Length: 64
Image 1 (tube, one colour):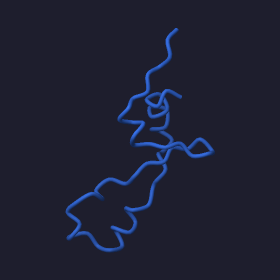
Image 2 (cartoon, helix red, strand yellow):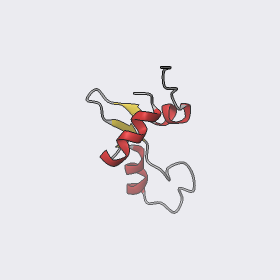
Image 3 (cartoon, one colour):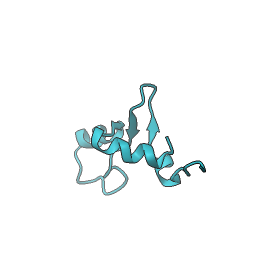
Image 4 (cartoon, helix red, strand yellow):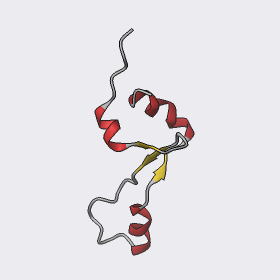
């Protein structure tokens, strides 16, 4: 049985934490920032945790 290949686009977008959760970046933070409030832009800078319903798919893409 061969090893499962890692989906390279997913590997660049997600990181595993020490406890096994998956970290991700927020969307809508790259450009067109003039109409966004400072509070929203500040919140978009932080990372977020992937929800439980999506974890299985992402683990499979990461080859875990």
